[in-house]
Amino acid sequence: MTDIDDIHHPLGFRDAHDGRRDPSEELHPRPAGLRDAVDRWGPDQDHWPDPALAQRARAALLSDRAFRAYRDDALVLDQRLEVAAAALDSRIEAGPLARIRAGVMAQITPQQPVRWARRLAAAAAVVLVAGALGGASSLFLVPPEDDIRVASTVQLDPLLFGPSELGF
Amino acid sequence: MLEDDTPSPECQLSRIEDVRLVHEALDRMPDRQRAVIVLAHFQELGQAEAAAILGMSEHAYESLLARARRRLRGLLAGQRDEDGEDWT
Image (cartoon, rainbow over all chains, first blue to last red; front, side, top):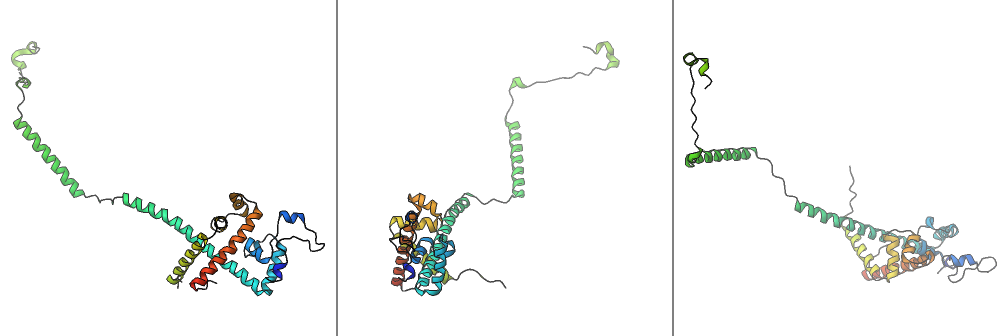
């Protein structure tokens, strides 16, 4: 613990001038020292809410090797946590996507190319079979007697029978 | 000439191992301290949001976060001593 760390006593918030406790500081306790400030607010002094303390930390970084090492340790911890968070994010993103992709690919059957020659041959075979069936049915299936209708047509010569005979 | 930005296999392996160590250290922390680290560093929540989630004042959250960071650093330093590796 260096002198710089004792700037703010951990248990008391005494005014530097008259030694009285500032009640507003009890509601908003300040860090117990620069190291505590690093732990509370992170290693980057630019983001500290207390500019005076941040300024003191910058000075300490130049003059106090132990504080600099402490701050560097905090920086390394932040970086390691950042890497761990990024790894977790990528695992979360990659996991479901890979599962969805595999599921979709399993359901998709590869599309067959259209083979026109095979289709034409199939159509020709259908026509041939239909023709053969039609022919066979006309040969073997005899229609019933009632259904046979014989029609006879008589053509009269108008020169022989005259126009009055045409009407019958 | 294009440079390859892909990290080397050794670097990737080292990173994976480091992530594993961080997760192990987090597993060994008390629940509230782990929660505060996760909210601050993994969820990247602001102080007010994280404090509200944990049901505490922002200043209590700050103190808890400071304690959690100190403990995590200690745990990781212990792992480093066990593994004989230098992470700095």
